[in-house]
Length: 471
Image 1 (cartoon, rainbow, N blue to C red):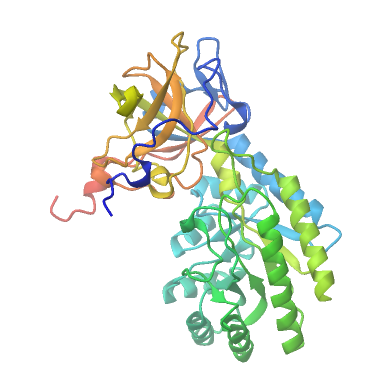
Image 2 (tube, rainbow, N blue to C red; image 1 turned 90 degrees about the horizontal axis):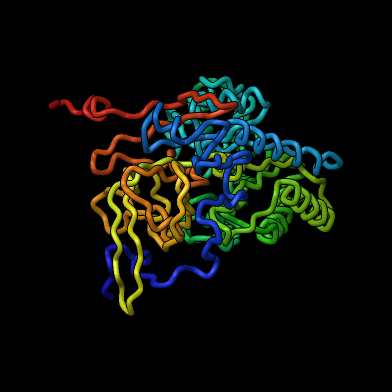
């Protein structure tokens, strides 16, 4: 089958049904911007009390901008709502998923606010330790942990290691014996749930790389192996069903299967599992086409499902952990760009789309090209009196699929030198950034009360050449 190099992103024709022509092209759709973000009378975007033009003047563009107060408020809300919803049960704890966005400074916020953290690699572990996260507040995930990573995790005393395969059980037991450790572990389970999301971010169905399959007996075998190793302490079972999930139905299905699995383990081995990990994946609104639940609704729904299913299985309700990352970091961040070339492209039937080129692209936000993700955008440096025009925001990379915003109405007079802001880029944009076309990665800055703090400086050519032994 012939395929365009831009894949499913190419030539979609008319805009999606959820995208309405705005009555005021300068207005902000508040639900998709950090709380408190607004525009001044002259149309300049303000985030965390600081004008976008001032951010650009201080650190240039592209730049990832995190509203510190918004980030911390979202984290606190998740922690508070889950604590409240599970107060009459065995309790719950929120572990921020570091993979979404982590720096030493952000880890410091989390440490100050009393959140636990979930890491997936040795380097993520080192970053959160340097930020002040206590080892007993760290869970270590990962689908292919090295000996060095596991030895380090056990040496610092991380609270919990989540096991991803049968081979890893023997690996951890061997290292624990060699280093005289008794780590607490959970087994990650694949339970046949296919969340209604993109194929690449469905993570609990059977035909994928994560976890032990419940269907083929791998979970049961894993439990037997863990219990057979005197060095390993089994704390419970874990699952993660995917990302960008907008209701609790899929979590309800997962809880039903995990409760049954937990009951089977407890009956077979005569023990009580203290903890159940339910992952994260709570959806956020990237556009007006998304309608996510708030933390109170999520926590209440998960608690109700769990209490009902444990009662049905006649087991005690375990302590619960959840791992929001995107739902905390995503809406708290925006990316600022400077507009370069602007050109109209006429398609079949006389349909015209305005292509707006920016000084970044798929190296700082791969999600549109990778997942077909939708984003919005707004003119951030001035007010326009021009009518709205359908536009596509594209990057500077040598790829037809280098698209950041597929469809958005922008002022018809948008021009080179304008600032453009894309919301909900706090999660997985910096984390997945690359140096494609030898582009230096943007800085990550925090704004609060009108002040800017650089969390990660912009990369330079010297940074790129530092690894080049011929430079």
